[in-house]
Length: 203
Image (cartoon, rainbow, N blue to C red; front, side, top):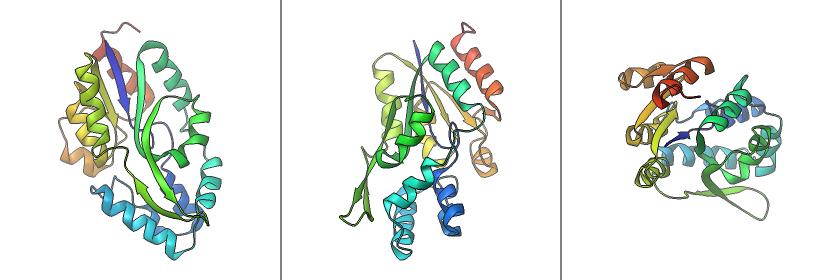
């Protein structure tokens, strides 16, 4: 039996931090795991920028509430869930994800959490577990699932390498160059066709 382990941002939704950067005008917040492979370095940089600019959790959630899934994402996710089990494994946070999950029809999400001060400032982040994406894929394989990994960024690579089959979706050129053996898709029809080939065209 197959199961999908997919990233969230860049696959089903826009990148949250890029939208925050665009809404606040803070260019440095546009950096994502597509640019910086070390997640701890990236998050510490983000939290420092939020602190310097007095940006609170409520400011970010207001921006997230205005975001919509990527064009075609809801239909694609609905198709997936009719044909194969899906778990979204993301390095986002419980405090961010709610508005986007609602618009996607509340799929299962494994992610992290934030530490928030009494004044609503984000004071830190808490990993659900180290290398959570990779460990999710490995754990599902131990349960006799055949795992299909879908991702687009550096923080997805360990999950993709642990999966039985893996697909890059709309990856930046640097990711595509560094991992040339991973199949690449640029739209949901291509992604659907690759998945159908993996699961035996039974959908």
